[in-house]
Length: 274
Ligand SMILES: O=c1ccn([C@@H]2O[C@H](COP(=O)(O)O)[C@@H](O)[C@H]2O)c(=O)[nH]1
Image 1 (cartoon, rainbow, N blue to C red):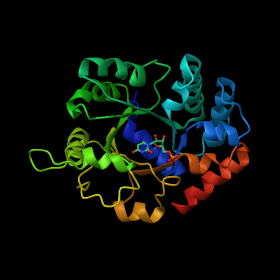
Image 2: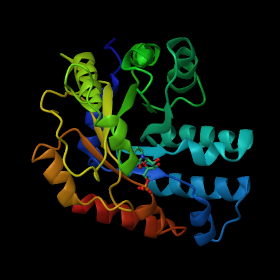
Image 3: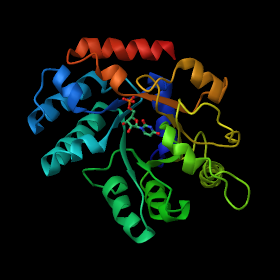
């Protein structure tokens, strides 16, 4: 029997089939209003399941934003679990955007929750924050690899405040972002076609002034769409080789709901622009 695909291989196949666009499910209160839904668990559920119906099987990756589900407590988290299960059933890769990060011993529990076999909160990958030190993420890196899942680590985030930390210069002369990139690159070394440790590099960051040349993993590019990032920005930042770049957009697609066919055609329009 052949070994199951690792995350990089699953991602490469998904991108081959559907293109690089990752669509976010971010049930903002203002979007619930504009879809004519109540700001309640019932409204959240209708919103999220409509998005699943529109995006499942049509894009390579869907990224539910955990915060908007957690805001409704345990019933909201139950909706997130259902979203993850239904997206998996549709054959679409699920990146749970939870941005977890803590000391290693606590990180092991986060790893179990978001990357553990049989956990209802485990998609195919999870976003992680490395700002307690890249090494603190080790339990999650190990569990991701053992279970054929992936992690996407913040490096250069799309928000303007990120630069004060991420572009700070470490004692060895590298920026914090470059240090994170180098750790991630080392972890992916030798994995084909793409490693299981990805990075967040926002589409809005201006200049990269980091070296991504040797990086063999997925690059999630948020900030594309509602935050002002454009296709031209992606080309400027990542050059012509965008094989592993996953532009991600949430509000700019979701504003076309609640009609499923309008959501689907918004997705198609963005996919074509890429
Ligand atoms: O640097 C980052 C990291 C994550 N995000 C998340 O992506 C989406 C963006 O939503 P839009 O509506 O397309 O602006 C959201 O879930 C963020 O938490 C990011 O924007 N920047």
